[in-house]
Length: 238
Image (tube, rainbow, N blue to C red; front, side, top):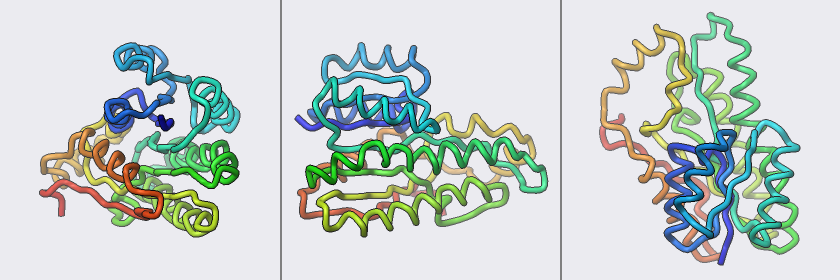
């Protein structure tokens, strides 16, 4: 039975992905900061699931997550880098703390996770890293400057890693979701941005389960197939 780590697993895409993968027969280690929520999900999912309190912006936490997963399930076959935040704002507002936090979670958090999990995958010549980026990596909008920068940075990093890993049997996939019904937007505090988005994002968003299905599809491909990039957006999103 293969083992997958899912970060940002306490809600939204991460929670839906964890549930989908357990149903599909995987062992799943759920990682996030909200341990009460993680514990409730794991109790529901049963013996194929476990959790580890993790701040992805901490390399020590990511190393501990890898160690805890190996202790519980034996090895890490796939890492789903899903944790992310989106406190977008206009650059002129100068919300430097929000900029720093997005860089720490959205970009450094992915790098630290890869750094913790990749060596064992390279040694086994088997593994899969799936990164949940965003359509904002490909299309900017007013207020998305730093968020888009982190997500496009992840895209460049992941495609480079994919090329580096072709000789080592490790696959790398980046998924670019459009609008999804998650808690991501709750971190936006700028009222002017919220008002602006209300006029732009006036379509039906995807369900987190739609992304979970995409992750499962990517994981189910044979070892000879690497889906490098996958975009999924609502039908109504231009």
